Image (cartoon, rainbow, N blue to C red; front, side, top):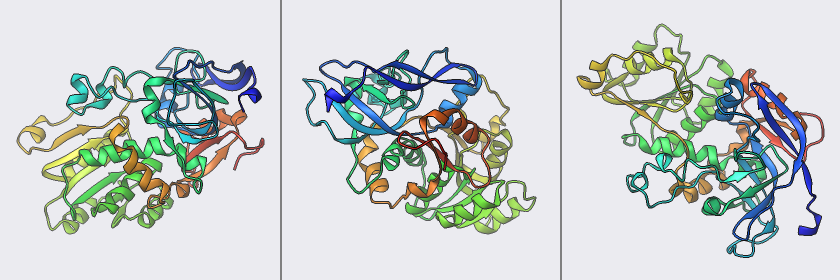
Length: 361
């Protein structure tokens, strides 16, 4: 198979704010301790969307980190894999040795902050290129995809991991009530995983179509965040206590204010979508100190959860196929980002599928 690998490939290169260009670039070269993977599918992540929309990192870069594909070249010192393996990739893997790792703060590990997958230029994931180089330090993050599962399911391993990590940060017990604000792809994953863990979920969203999906994914109650009767409804749901926890899957100030009002004393509010630096808001500090309402954050994946995530996704207990509403070919990656940036009532997860013809689904 290695003889079939071309010298150049197509890749969607970030050249500036909202400037994505389909270009011909060299196929990455690998060392004896690395893999070369032919990309088959790569999801559109809100984090990459923000980087492209706001220009938070300098160009040129080839983004895309929710990636799955086929191993086409194997470094001489690599063991445990073979050419032809269908794999899902994780672009961040912690060292498991440093001070941050000893505290299980893997997203703060210096090695974890390095991107170990690239299609060229400054490493940025590379999933919007036809081939990616998988560096040695992220090989522990390579997950084999069972024959019955698709590459799209493989590409969803990383985002599901980030959600499961956040769920496990909450101090909640089976039967507790949790507000999930926002029922896009990430919010629906929260709703499903929390429901599977025995929580009673209140899902909120502005789109009725997404509230319908939330009920199908396990939400006990659904509501518009604009419903003036929502505080009274929460009191009724919770016998006057308030929600035990809230998860914000949208970076909206009003959602934060509402969540902190709806959680009980000693409850928790977890931020998941506030990834743009420099954004500030006001918080009543007494609600943290006197009312003991914790304000938490969660970012990136947890290396230790890979096997558990694989069981959820590959068994289809968490059937991520239902989240993927639109697939685009590589040449239409810019259009895929535009749809993800401005979702329609019928759109959820958007994925770039490299083998598609030039028409989007």
